[in-house]
Image 1 (tube, chains in turn orange, green):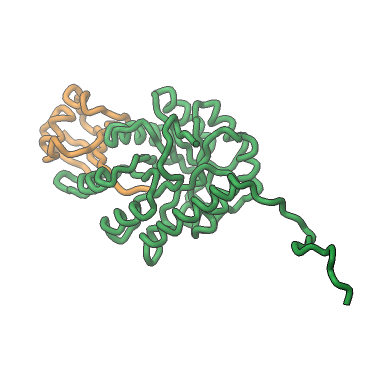
Image 2: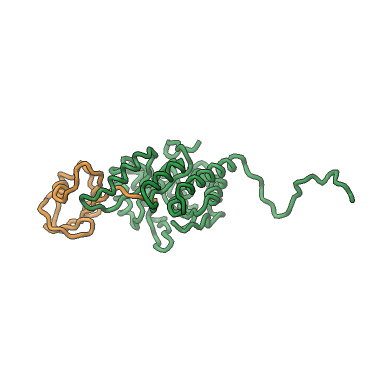
Amino acid sequence: MQITVNGERHDVQATTLSALLDEMGYDATTRIATAVDGCFVAASKRPALALHPGAQVEILAPMQGG
Amino acid sequence: MTLFYGTELTSRLMLGTAQYPSPEILADAVRRAGAGVVTVSLRREAAGARAGQAFWELIRGLDVPVLPNTAGCHTVREAVTTAQMAREVFGTDWIKLEVIGESDTLQPDMFALVEAARILTEDGFKVFPYMTEDLVGAERLLRAGCEVLMPWGAPIGSGKGLNNLFGLRALRAHFPDVPMVVDAGIGVPSHAAQAMELGYDAVLINTAVAKAGNPAEMARAFAMAVEAGRMAYIADPMEERDMAVPSTPVIGQAVL
């Protein structure tokens, strides 16, 4: 299905958020946070989070800040 | 002693981690500042990119408490979601809440800020709201559950110092028991000393250190200014006057 990840369109096989992270090659040990359609999804909730066509996924990592 | 949500910091200088020429210079600046807190953020990162992980390891190695921010957020929803993501990534319920209302000055949107602060404090966050020096806004933020306030000195990155001394003095006087941090706009150490002399409990600096020719040396200069300003505040400065008062005694002066 077609979804948007960090502002870019992707055609993915995954149907859950955790499967999406695997499919896109995110290392399970990497420190990231996720949101779908503007709502935070905790790491523990990723396996149960079903993706839908057109879903807007954000994957964020630590970064310098002021 | 000043407690920020029950925590006493080792220093009243809070330091941002952005815009340094290299990670090594950042680490050096944090050490030389003896920073009591470092601020951090979250950004998009592609799979396989290791910048976020490397940054996180650098920060952990510094052993300084982190204060994640919601920089770049313009709505309550963006700020709340970003705060929730930051809590999970950084493992802290402290959040520097920024909700920007005007893009030229990066002025906080006080209305959205109060709403976001209320939602986040109800969700267990310890909110450090980046605000204007507005007294009514401050009162609303405290009512929303904030126990710390962070008024701006001047627009972020401007280096202009304390733009509204009267406003900052009034804010300090109205809420004498609330820990308050001057955040943003400080350009040189004398600005930081001035904020501390007014009785502010801490200052947060980023650009003024990161963009200095020698960030580590500037970090040290800020640390000394913050300490001097705090010491001066405790020592109770003299009253300012319009007219001169001779400091040398006039009694016994010769008539020549």
